[in-house]
Image (cartoon, rainbow, N blue to C red; front, side, top):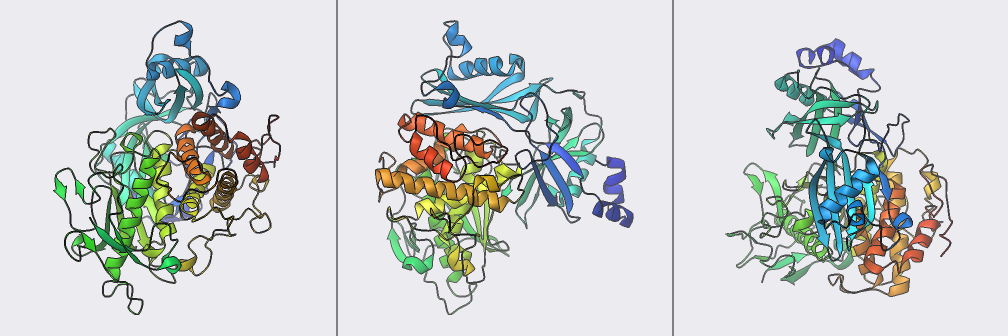
Length: 610
């Protein structure tokens, strides 16, 4: 790492500096997620992620040691007692979870801080941070799940650092902000700067300024951790993941080539959006903005939304394929379609547990918990074919959909669903922080879930059919292989990933595993034509429950093994393990069986009971 004196603003335009930067293979070794009780130095896709940032294309390698994650393989379906129950002490879920963490991690209770919680049916999920000297450790987190006051799973990466920096900052905050801007090429956005410790891959606790910078043009948003003693950048967290009526391509249509357009009346869900899509608080809207979503084109007047074509809230705009995507009512048709798809995603996933309490995207939470003023902001006809920035609960996510080779990506519904899914994944894992997918493997898994949801949602029967992503807008399948249960058609296996730093390969493997799970569960339980009824026990409804529940249960920066185990745990929690062997068979088919480890060797072994 370079010192601030040799690297930063006073020499920004110095050609010698730029030459030096170009030769640097590693600028920043950092830790956004801390080690379980020790540190690792081996570079791996499960612990590191390298990205290039800023106008100078500076390479940043982040370090995120793997979490400890224990689930029903260790604790059984009914769970285990926590220390307070053994002492016959009455305790809340958070107190019980904290006592369990103390016993497992040997971290002093004064250094464990409860951050948030979520309860669903008979499961309580409690989330914690570690503190040192009364200051939060940004990359030391834990989550504990309890059922009937017994622990059924936990994940943690609390750490006992080798060395702890002074809690008093020395380097000037203003200069630290300049350094953060220089490395990322983004600008400080006036979000309050916070002092936090970061655990580095050397095992030390470094006091840092946590500075938020963003680039409005490119939708980049970062938390930059700058050493408070000398101004050196030690870590970067990246939040980017790539009676009304609406004329739209229906929600279950992959794109406009499937079924064309329909005028759909009152599609909002009365549970998820009881005031409809065009009201938040006391505000009523007559354009493509509302409680859950705002869809707009960035123009000279700022956020240019589409207004109703006729009262009240009728959005009947016809796409004209003979005109440019920018001409006539084509921009209006694009905004209306995206507004509809994103709202449908909000309402559907609300039914399955992505609600105000679990950190969803809404302006007005109607007093039901969580932070508000964070609806999904979607810019259509932008510069990127598809990208989303997902900050923590209480701050709006920003999605951008652009123009593809074959047309406006706003009509490629699976891409909108893909990007929205990044928001769901980012918020649910880690308790609403949106910081838990920073390793190469976790980043790839995030992309995998984002492909899995449109594949699931846009099914119209239990047929075992292949899925091609973004095929209309791209002119062909955007992925390397179609998603298929046929291993000749889609050959990816867990053992092929090795130390692979190719996030697309990781994503495709995880998504095809979910393809296998969906098909297997539908063969056993059939297909629900109404996915909006989460009480149905059909294969596709079960799959969506397992995705949502697993995301909440798994630890921060999950590996394939962690994510798999969380799904098995989710089935134990919700279905008492009824699908255990079906799930294990699906995992084993792709090499992620009972004997699989992080060494990435294929295992097609099933548990003895299967």
